[in-house]
Length: 253
Image 1 (cartoon, rainbow, N blue to C red):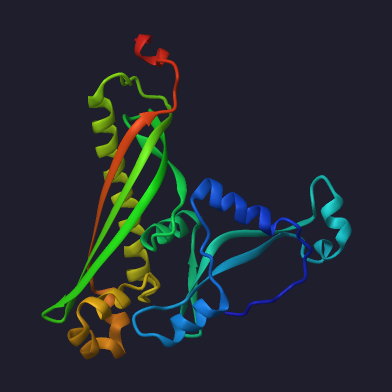
Image 2 (image 1 turned 90 degrees about the horizontal axis):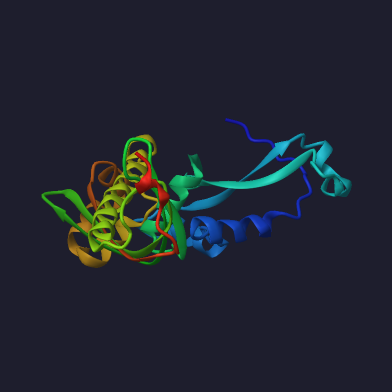
């Protein structure tokens, strides 16, 4: 696989990072020291924010490009590059990148859409997230537990639930918990099956919590990671609603 590097002016990267922080909850925040540490420390493989050029790279090489209403080329930051040692293995999508940040306990605030019926959805603004990881080896097999705790408020809804009932918040929270579990688990399984490289640092958790057993598998930890049993358990509490009026949808038959 060959990669070509092109020059393209962009004044938008910091704006995109701010947008990722605001809308998606965070950015990887990877610095060179982080990459070097991941390369040299056992139990973790490095990641980097991936940048691509959208449009014509040659036309985007001039400063005039950014003065146009619709630039000929833009630098876009929308994915995460996965490495195994010093070799590029692939990329994670923007949504997978957010799930990665969730596992890393780096989510500030984010928004998710929860399906409450076949064609109706509820928007939740999630905040105050905390992630804790426990890991150990049992009979040579890695067992990892990822516990996510978060709070949220209802930001918008197409559902005809009664928002003045405590039952609504409990049921919606349970639905959101299940969805977060599925999203994060799907990202973990994707990395396990397609790349087999521990970018999440689960090996570091096993190293701290089960040192003697980890030392036995340290040299082939990525193989153990690819075959690990990983359980995601989310607790999400909906505290309130950001909607000031009752939904008219409950009046619609």
